[in-house]
Picture 1 (cartoon, rainbow, N blue to C red):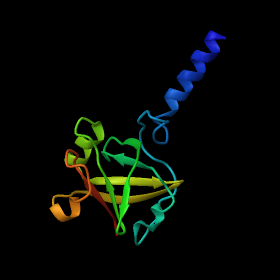
Picture 2: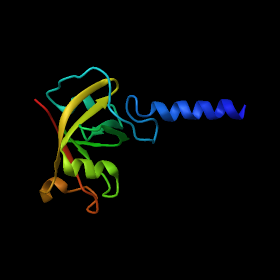
Picture 3: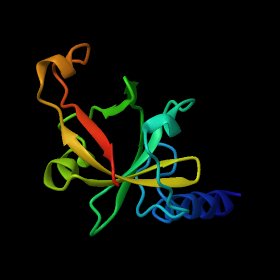
Picture 4: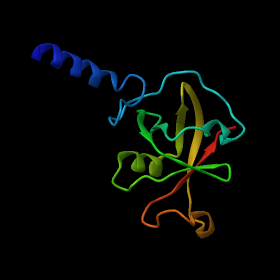
Length: 130
């Protein structure tokens, strides 16, 4: 029984890097169909997304987001690995369900746009790639 459980845990952890994160564990490159969207309407009805950062060595996490006035925002804490990735390279991919969208993570600095967000967090606006 103990061996079977160990094998199951090993397989689950090993699969985390195969197609994105597994629960709260980060993963690797996302696989699936890439889509194109004109707006973030594709995010309506979801409370989280899967974000892939660092294109050269993909790293993915499941995170919450804010959709406001048609714009999509994420707010990584500075101690998060994916925050460092966004700061180094804005190229990201975002997955809702099985569809992946290319985007750029733009740091938000405009006080009017930051209104309503936690002032202790860094806010990034995700812009869909054309």
